[in-house]
Image (cartoon, rainbow, N blue to C red; front, side, top):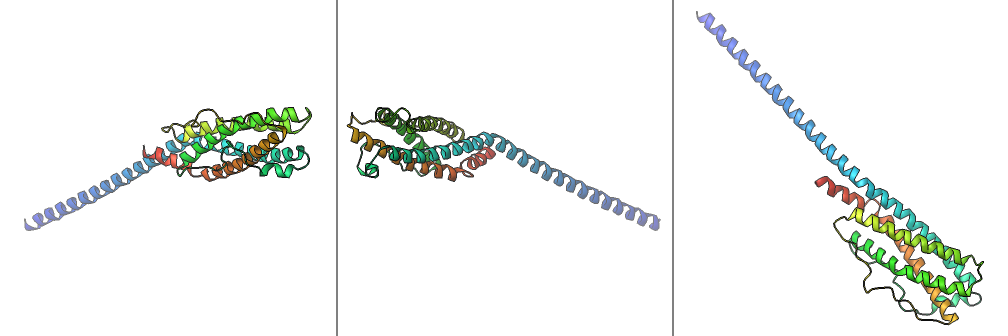
Length: 235
């Protein structure tokens, strides 16, 4: 009887041990499954954030390329302009001219700097148009500067549209302010020399501005849209 009882106790202990081992294996399997599901959820969230972020990166790339085109065209236009003004053209860009937009970009945050670029660009476009109107009276119809001026003006308008699109994709909750102070102030009627000076200063300043714009958009790559992707991942 004692031997039978002992055997029963041993069997009970072994069964209990087996049950504990089975329970531990089950808990380990559950923990592994939960870890896998968590990793899948994180991966899915990142994929959703990346897919939402793709239009932002695509628009940024397009805007950066267009900014480089406008910068190159503005530099070429400035050279052509000076060459077309005759003797003393090197002195045309030394006289002060009022009401020309500042080529420098302001703001601390990326949204503020993009807004500054946009408003400055909107202010420059009427000046480019005025220079073209003046030069059509001063240049021969066959002058290569006139179609170059038209091309820079057209691409500048396209750049403004692209910046507007990019801004709203990168900062959908922030309105893009329009230029303050109403319409751009243009100069009154000028004599021939004053028109040459005005045109030279506008194109010189615009060349500097477009160079700054290209540098800014180069710095935005890997920053602005990546920050938006992180924000998407949180939600």
